[in-house]
Length: 140
Length: 81
Image (cartoon, rainbow over all chains, first blue to last red; front, side):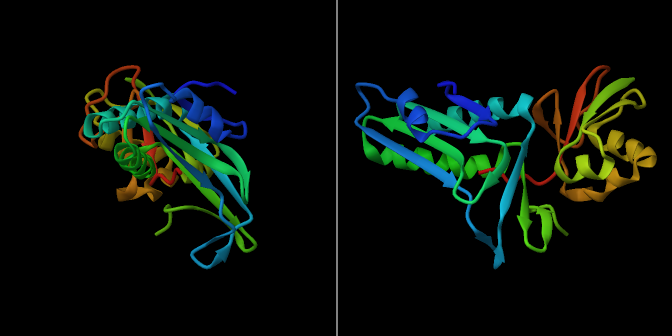
């Protein structure tokens, strides 16, 4: 698994790799957000999430999100790693790690980055339940 | 002019393919190309107003003017994270 800052991969994610890549001697605060597959959504049992992305675009969007975060918050570094493919309950789908000289900026930038990712990253997920499968947010 | 259209998620499934090599009228915009293509591929209109566009892998408005060889991506509502 690569230790680049912006990663889209079929392989299981390791949050420690994202944390390592953004660690610097001058950064006293590191915040890591780990997103995992939950066993329910809107009252339905979830058995599997199938993630799909536009791979040629997604790492550029991650880089754009990082640039936005850097502009707004005094952070040292940021990494965004996302997994695609079939994920089971408990699997890690996304890791965002942010380092900063002080904790407040790291918390704020991490929250900003995951919120932006959910809004603009070209990634989709199909929710499998005992009653069938549906693309999330893709319904009438 | 020739463009490449990329399809994802529900649209990829509905059409049974992830891309189309398409011939669209010169001067087409993202939106007019979609309308044009929906004649040959009616399933494309299913996404309707909820679709967003990217041209050459950058987010683009529906009014973005296309050029020969462009890659037009039709983006259903995203759900990463």
